[in-house]
Structures are given as structure tokens and as C-alpha cells.
Length: 316
Image 1 (cartoon, one colour):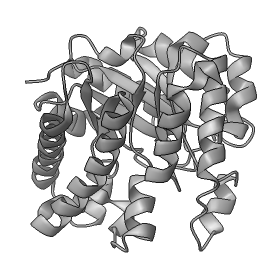
Image 2: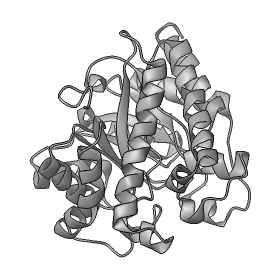
Image 3: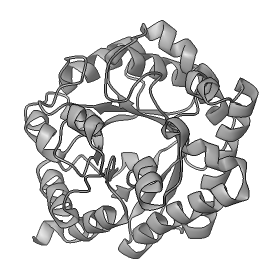
């Protein structure tokens, strides 16, 4: 059974870190081929599971050493019906792999969690379409139906919550919130923003949060920002009316736009030390944010710098 589903510990004051850019790390640093950026395919054999275990353990150790909580975000960003079918998986196989992903997260939690350091398991949900572009948009009802199977798999597992990352338009985030409400599992919605701090579909973060809350009756436990450099959205956070609804950030290492990243042939991993300082500044300005990790281009170096800076941020 879920350990924390009824009372997510990240809704308190404790600091939590999560991992970095799973797919970019596996592809560019480990040389692992991921069809359609789908890390869940590694769950099908022992060699792949070993690679995932090593990846998650490296971050779990950073959290352990820093005395921080940890969010175990499952490697299931692409394991929804359309993407699964595109690379040859049936709905039944996707259900089994989504469940296996949570079982893997549970094994990491059992290894590292202690009474004073909670390790929360989250079922990761990705967009039906491209993570950078708001194309082939669904209505909230269509998104609710599309994501129901994957969320249902997580609801039947030991996952404590689901987190929808790289959401780039409001209706898909709304549909996921509704589907999670249907299944009785807490939901976190994380929006992608462009260099101007707006969603690719044009809404501000404030507008997006207000709209999802309106459609879902305020169901999301909290919201996050992801897949953009801190310089792209810091000023937007300062202007937000609903800043109290944002509790998490998973930023990119690169200052490049999504269009530039799409064209890049090499991974831009930025400056890990500067990245840590960016996070310390953000959390000093926005103390409600207590879940932090990385997105594209980030790895253990970036998360370690974040953890080191956050431990001493008040004295800095």
C-alpha cells in the first residue's frame, strides 16, 4: 500500500530533492538508446533495470547525505497509450511496466528511507504530444480519458501520488487532475514554460493554475515549473497571485530556448555550481517552494550543488 497517499509529506515545511534529467542522462552520459525518449523500456530486462537502479540510487544517496527528503519519480514519462503503441507496447504491457516501475521505486525507498527522511513515490506522467510544443491539443475531457489507464495503474500500486511533467497547455493538465480525482490518488501538475515565463500555449503560470483549479475543484496537491532555466521564469513567479500553489521546480541546466534545444546536437549541461546558486536564490525569495530537482541536461552534479546550497541557504 501507499505509505503517504493520505498525507503527502512534501506539503509540510521539509525540503525534498528529486532526480535530474533522466532521459538526457541515460542517453548522453550512459550511451543508452531510448526509443522516443522512453526510459520505461529499460524495465523489460535485468540490464535495463540495473541501469535504472544505479541512476536512482545515486540521487537517493545525495538526499541521504544532505539530510533531505526525496521524491522518487518513476521512469514512466512515455508509458502512456500513444507513445507505448508507437514503440510496440500493448495497453496490458504498459500496465505491467507502469506497475513494475513503482515496484522499482519501492525497492529504492526501502533501501534508503528512515524515520526522519521520507522518500515519496510518484508515478510520472508525460504529455500525449511533444513536451516542447502545444500541438494536437485535447479537451480536458479527452485528456481525462486518455490518461485514465496510466493513472489507474498507479492508483492500484504503492505510488503515493502522480506527477504530470512537461504539461504545456491547460486542458491536458486539467484532464490529468480530473482523472487522478476519479482514481483517488493525489496529483501534482508541472508546467513547461518558455523563455518569457509563459506556457507554450500562451497562458501565464497564474492563468494556468487558476484554470486547472477551476476545472478540477482545486484538486492538484500543488503545482510545479519544469523544463526551463530559472532565468526564464523567476520574474514571473514574483508577479504571481497564486504563488502559494507552486511548491516545486525542476529546471533545465541550459539557458537555451526549447527551439534551440531541439536543434542542438550536443547536451548543454550549463554550470552546476551556478545552477545551485540559482535555486538558493529562488527558495530564499519563494519559501513555499520545497521540492526541487532538475530537467533536461541536469545530472547528479547539479542536484548535489542544489542540496549543498539549500542546506546553507539561510546563512548565505
